Length: 250
Length: 283
Image 1 (cartoon, each protein chain N blue to C red):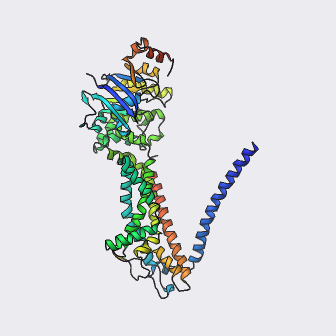
Image 2 (cartoon, one colour):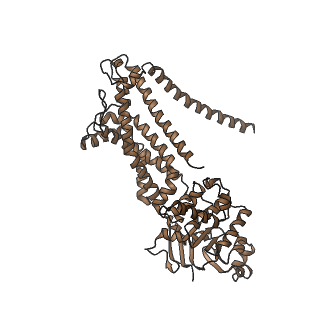
Image 3 (cartoon, rainbow over the protein chains, first blue to last red):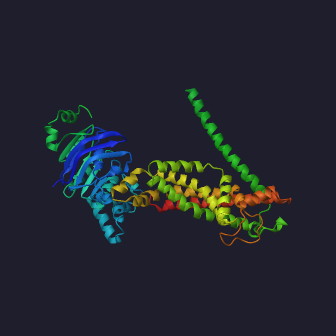
C-alpha cells in the first residue's frame, strides 16, 4: 500500500508558483530521495507532506496529499497528530537549548506527563535507535549545544523518533556535516528503513545513489523523472535527467 | 596605508572619548546628588514619618513606601497585560490587525508621560471615581509602561530562532505548546529585563502622579490600594521648588539619592535573577 501520495500539487510562494502539478507515490519502508538543483522546489514538496508549510502565511497550494489514503489537507485533519505520524528532521541541526534528555523527551511530554521511568526508557530507546546512546549515556544532562554537529543531528533524529512516527521526512540532513558524520547518518537511515518510511531531500547525487531505493528528480518545480534509484542513475529515460546526473549542470 | 591607519585611530579615539564622556556625565549627576544628599541621610530620614513644620525632625518613610507600592501596582497591571499582548502580537497575530496594533503601540511608547497623567486624571480619578489613590496612580503608570513592556517583549520573542518553533511543531506541538515549551523559556530573560527597566522608569516618573494627585503631606502609611499616597519623585519636586525651609534643597537631594538607590537596587536584583536563571540552564 502506498504510504504517501502526492496528486497534482501546485504550490505558490508569495504569488510565485514553485511546484507545478507534482504527483508521486512514496512506498512504505523505502527511502525515497528527492534530488534536483537549488530552488527546484524539493524542500517545499517535502514540507507539504506534513503541512509544515502551514506556518508560512504567504503560501498557498492546490492539489492533494494523501497519507494512508486520507487527504491531509482535509478540513478535519488533526495537524499535530499528523506531524506525530509524519516527523521531520531539518537541514541544520536544531536542538532546543536544553539538555540531551529534555530534547528527546520534548515530544513525549507534549502528550501529557508520562511517569519518569517510562519517559527514561523511551528516551533511551530513541537515542539507541538514532545510534547516539553510547556517546551520551553518561551525560544526558549536558546541554545539547555541547555536542558535535553530527551528534546534534542524530539527537534531532532521536527526538523525532521518540514520538514514534511512521514516516520521517529529512530535509538535507547532512548538508552541514563532514563526510564521517554523514556516513554515520547514512548507515542509520539504512537501519531505520526496516521500520520506517523515509523521504530524504538531498542536493548530493552520490548520497541519493548510496542510500535511496527510489529517486525523484525535480527541475523548476516539475517532476522530470521518478523511478527506482538503480535504474534512474544508470538508464535515465529523460534527457534532462541524463544531463543532471552526468553533472552537466546543477 | 598611512591614511587608513590614521582614520582607524581617529575613529577609535572618538568612540572612546564618547564612552568616557557618557560615563563622566553620569558620574557628575551621581556625585552632585550624593555629596549634598549624604548630609541629610540618617536612619531617621529613612524610617520616620514626614514632618512638615520642621523637616529636620521627619523622614521620608511614607514616600519610600508609596513608591514601592506604586512599583508593585505597576508590575501587577503592566506585566500580565504587556507580556500577554507581546505574545499575541508576535506569535498569534497575523496580517493587518497585528501590524496596526504594533505600530500604534510603538507610537504610544513615545507619548509624553504628562499626557498619560491627564488621561489618568480624567479616566481613573474622575470617571471611574478612584480618587487620588495608589490604585489610580498605578493604573496610570501601568498604561504608560505598557507600550515599553510590549515592545521589549516583542523584541525578546523575535530573538528566538524560528528553527526552535519549527522543531516543536514538527514534533506535533500545538501553537500554545510551542510558545510555552520552545519560545517563552528562551525569551524570558529579555522580557524580564525590558519589564524591570520599564517599571523602574515608572517609579521615577513625576508628571503622571502630579496629575493623578500624589500627596505631599501624610503622617501615616497607606494601608490599601485606595489610600492616598506620597511618592519619592513628587516629594523631591515639591521640596526642590515649593518648600520655604532653607534645608529643603539638601532634603531634596537626599530624596533623590534614595530614589536612585532604590532604582539601582531593583535593576541589580533583576540582573542577579537573570544570571541565576541562566545558570540554572545546563549550558
